[in-house]
Image 1 (cartoon, rainbow, N blue to C red):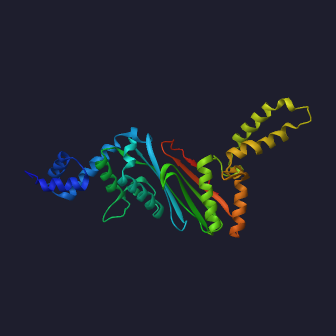
Image 2 (cartoon, rainbow, N blue to C red):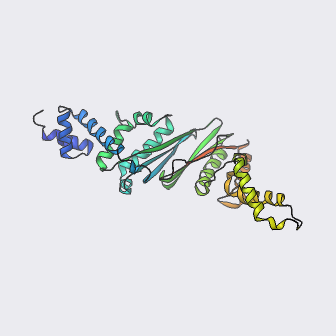
Image 3 (cartoon, rainbow, N blue to C red):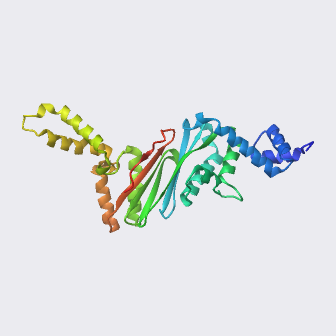
Length: 301
């Protein structure tokens, strides 16, 4: 087209938030087709963002969502350049909608997620992300995500350490054995426990043998002076492992965050009695914004 009508440029700016110059160029490249021009601008924004790897992991937020029936939950981390973008309501709504979409519909890769639908006529995750990048003028992207589905009978709970369902840290926990209120209560309590204490292991049997041997050897060396004084160093090491290492590193052995005179195992027993069925903690996942990608993930039990 030789001349782009000003009204068309104005409408494209309203739709995308792009500059006048970028809107004019996009309309010229798309022969005046408004929708093609908008798609072109989104693609350019996403391409520019993908060329800025420094943003990935520098700043970020984690959104969480658990379905109302407890059948599934999700975590998603979004990385960005500056924290200014977090204050925008449009950004917050996008991230929360993304977490809901992941919880509702299984996706196996980032490519599948970008093609997934979001609320709104014909809106994909890819389109919404491109619009946000255009409007904010910042590069940001989806760093990682995780979906957890409960095996029946069981429930999944989610927790965000922040404002609402959006913060710097998010946790998912699955509890099996019942879908009663007591099972939901246990799952919710454990999301808080994992977020505050971040145990590397769920059960004692999850601790690798080399780690056990290392901790035990360290204890024996520390208490060598007790040998010959009527104390058995092996028995002493076992006692210290139970009272120190396991209470720190193993979720079920940790003091319950709300009542430190009791352990998490005591809480599981209490909730099992309330549910009328034995409850079992199956797994948990923790994301912390900006942390290494090796998130805290327990084995699946």
